[in-house]
Structures are given as C-alpha cells and as structure tokens.
Length: 422
Image 1 (tube, rainbow, N blue to C red):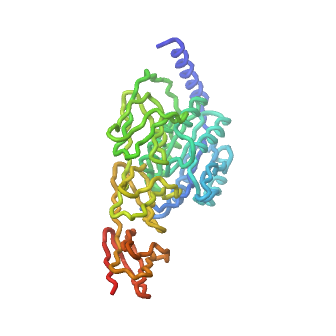
Image 2 (image 1 turned 180 degrees about the horizontal axis):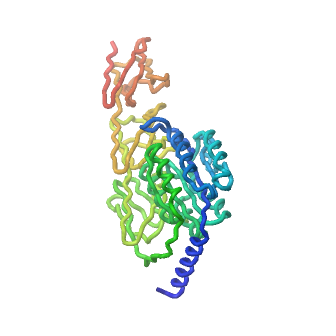
C-alpha cells in the first residue's frame, strides 16, 4: 500500500474510532408520504396507515435521551404538480422524551399524495443531523424509487464521505426490484443497513431493530484495489440502454442487441430504459451486477398504439405500436392506454413477461354513422365505422350503440365479441 493511501486509511480509522468513543446518537427519521403510500395492503389498510403505526412503535423503543428530528416528504403537493422539493422538517431535533408527542401528533395528520424526491430529502436530512452531537443516523422509510432528478446512491456516497459520523439506514416497504436496488445501494455506501418490510407489523419490527442497533464501533477497514466489474441487462429492449456514470452523467457504455454485458470500472451507474432510468446501480470489482427488467407485451394491438405510463406519476415510459409489441421496463406498476381509457395496475416483477391479451369488439357490416363504445364510467372508448370495425379494449364492462340501442358487453381478457348488425 502506498504511503498516501496508508495515511488516508489511518486517518479514516482514527476518525471513526473517535466518533464511536464520543457516544450518543442523533437520528433523522424520514417518512415517505408520496402518492404510492395510498396503496392498499393485502393484510388490510393502506401503506401509509401501516407506516404511521410503525413510527409510533419506533419512537416507543428509542432511548428517551436520544436526539431525534422528523422529516416527511410527498405530503404537501398532489402528484400532478410533480413537486420535487416537497418535504418538511415536521419536528426539529430534541430528545425523544421531549419530541415524542409532537412526532405522534404530526404523524396522525399526514396525507400521502406527492412525488418521491429521495436524493433531495436525504441531503437535507444529512445536513440537519450533521449539526447534532454523537453518531449521525438517517433512517429512511420508502415504498418506491426516486421520481425526481439526481441519484440517491451517489448523493449518499458523497454525504458519507463528507461526514465520517454519518450512517444511513433504509427500509424498503413493499418495494419493487428497482427501488430495492436503489435503497440497498444508499445503505451500502453510507455505512448503513437495508431491510425489507412487507406489512404493518413487519415495518414496525424492522424499525424497532434499527432503533436498537448499537452505534458502529468497528475500526477495521478493507481497501480493495480497483478492479473492473461487469454489468448485465437481461431481456434488453430493441432501442438499447445507455449506461452513464451516476456522479456526472457521462455515457460510458450502451447495451443493445446481443451485447447484454459490458465491462465497467467499479462505481455507480444509471441505466436508461427509454425516458426512465434504473438509478443507483453499483458495479463492484470482480463481480457481475445483473439487472433483470420486466417486459410488457400486448397482443391484438390497436392500430393507434398504446402508451405505457408509470402508475403513480402518469409519466409515459414507452409506447407500443406497429411491429413493436413489447417493451422492457423497470420492475414496477404501470397503466397501458387503450384510447381514452387505461388498463390499470399492471404489476410487472423482475424477469417477468407480462402479456396483455385485450378483448376485441368486432362489428360486422357497421352502420354508416358508426357505433360508439363507452366504458362503464361513461368514457367514450372509440367509434367503429367503415374499415375500422374492430377495437381492442381492456377486459371489463362496456356499452355499444347499435340502431339507437345501448347494448351491454361484459368482456374477458382475450375474448373476441362479434356483433352482427342486421
């Protein structure tokens, strides 16, 4: 090991040792109140209701003398405003005994509705706690990935480098694979732990484990020599995937066609999936990092095409039309448009090929004035006339106007409904 590197490692070790000897801790607790926290849990109630219960349990398990501050994001602006600075320090730092009632009171009134600006929020929280005594701990609870600019993992790495006493723990609450990658990376580069939580009791338990976790006292440091690693994307999209460095946005590779794996220096990267980005992808020396996106495929596509939207934000992540009937996507939940309506809540898991087989309405010998088709809520889905005598729709209930009558239709996935006009 070179003398400068030895000196750096020695300095870092002594800094961590001194930090541990100071004792005490200050915790910045961050709660996700983005729109996706309104989703229902299989066990009953919403994710937000479960999180509120877990916050109360967390506060109850902390040492009364620990200092704590409470920050929430996504609670002030509706999703349509795309507010990437929607966060508030709800309760400033003080001891748990002094802040308990204020935190519980503020938590009861929180409504979930906005975006997920993780990079911005952890930066603010780290700056908040940096002014407090003892070990600096950030605990982030999130049910999703970053929906704003910036890379949370790159930010966490820089924050941890700037504050040797900083530890960031993350809890993924019912997260998809892309969000898990991101939250794991944040904890990994900031000396913290990542845990999964799937329900109300589980979330409370995991928060409790972090509350009881002792301050880091280990002074041993492993320094790895720089070695390249590999990045692989399974089922790459026909359009390809640009790979950029997370810290500066510089493109360093592209994955397309049969070239599904590239060699990269150890570091943090972002991988583009059309207009969306799989962020916080950590490549380690001598290892292969594998991204396993999902695929959405549509059969019996409409000639007008179909847009694929992020279910939470409504942002278009891709479009299917013509011969392009499938799209590689980040594991998440989507809406696929069929004209003015959408096929809702399409949950795509890592490595899964989700095949949508819409119903088809076909009118034989359509009237010259056409036949209007409405969804159950009254939305006009389309009009069949002339050569356009078929229409692909999501399964569900519809009406079609035939000869002044409104004929009800109850369509299953893959069903072809032939309507003969006489």
